[in-house]
Image: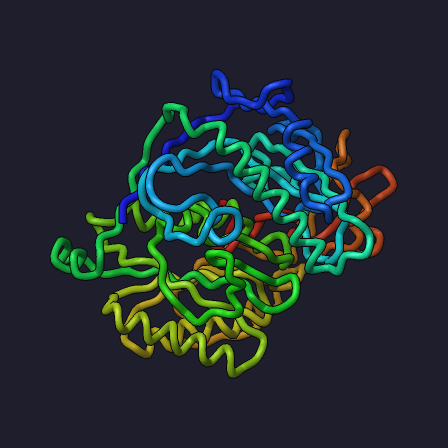
Length: 426
């Protein structure tokens, strides 16, 4: 499968009477966009703010981050099974607004949502401080249950990203990147001497507010299966979960998965990138055994030599991670796992809740328990009082001067287990 990504580099976002992209500036008509979003009767209000790199701005609590994209050629549409009809994606041409993102925020209904600081020490921990962000402050009607509340906000973000993406459908891209995955048979014939490598992508699916959607289906309802890596780039996988902000995979992460990018960069020269195996993370032991059995079985069926495994979340999913690792290693296939650590504030505690001798090649995204201090900001987008509630915060995290003392896990993407950020540990 072959996909071309046309990148339109966005250097600024401004509000204007007409939505358009001109001279690499994204102009947004908020009244038009608001009318579109308020078609959802469960959304009581939506307001818009712009957050740019270097500004003394804090966004809290962050629910999701989404990169605007649009299908230009090829089958299907962006976010299939959710906004577009259910049709396979990952081929043809897709245009992307590079350097821009949609960020959703609103009243907190769980506790595992995060913070994006656009400047200061907090900005160094999140990749989203480097983007021009259109922030949606969404408030739902009274009486919605938690899951329905999050669905309303999630759809508002996806609709906004699709609205902005359509502005680039007829534009000539500043840069075009091409990604291609041959079939299993074609790959074996084309690259007979290269090691065959697959990517096992573990998706958070551990119950209410811990959902990830694949072609619109909640992943907890699926068995382990396989996707072309380019399907991720067209929005086949979207985030719907509220795990700790530091290692949550937002929709932006799925659209720009760095493991996929890095494997493609070596494809055809150092290795044969066979594809992406997606598997869920479960609550009950029997479900963990089933999913990890299927993962190892599919790895064996593909006849690969090596596997990269990435996790999402911590604690309970550590068991899924180690099960996948040791069962794949038992098939004679080498693994590298990507995780992060919850090693206590002093870094001296056990980093993972589970372990095995076969997990001897590990990449870490850092220690999420490390305590940080975030200085006060001139502008707050959202609800600052959430600092005392979100995972990593505590009663008294928010100081009178507006500063925040909390664990690193409050920062969106800080210890991301796709290796999206630059933080690690030794």
